[in-house]
Image 1 (cartoon, rainbow, N blue to C red):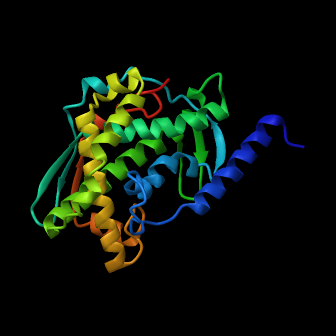
Image 2 (image 1 turned 90 degrees about the vertical axis):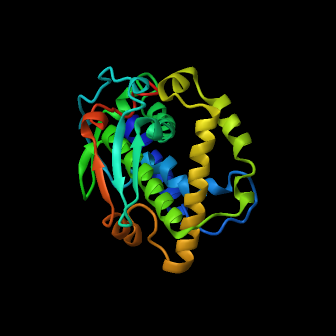
Length: 258
């Protein structure tokens, strides 16, 4: 008979599996609300939960807060990106900050369910899947990088193609940015350096990417998201350089929480 902790873990995994099965690919926006453009980003918000599906928890290891302060590195370049068309772009740590905040928020929900007395314990878990074994903190970091790069690549693709969404897609973003900023904790504001204007700019980029992915799904079919055949093939045509001296010290689970 399972002990209480194993029973709770089993129950959570079943619930998360249901959530993953119900997740939908990018589809045309029905225009039924100001947050409609965020639908394809559900993968970002539930990514850490999905990592637990089909996983075996191996042990709890020594991943911990190393004293890293994101606010001291916001202007530093994390990735240099060059398109096959000769466009160049950079992602700074500031550009990654909102992705970090959202992944940590989502992870914190599961961390509290795992151990309410020590939420950092969740991020220290080392889990095993058919493909890899890694800390949840490390997997969260990979998710941040994957989705930030995806958005940058598709933004560059859209620009090169001369693609522009209808202006109505952007009309409520300032209000949504203000609302998100007001919900941020003081630590989130301090760590990320995010302002209403910065959040709005990131939302504009997400909107552009979403609309462009909808367009691509009509043209190329599925596979346009991270891990999909279309996107992964496209990514190979880009030259992406990670500045590990900048990104290496980042520990997800300890930037805006814990």
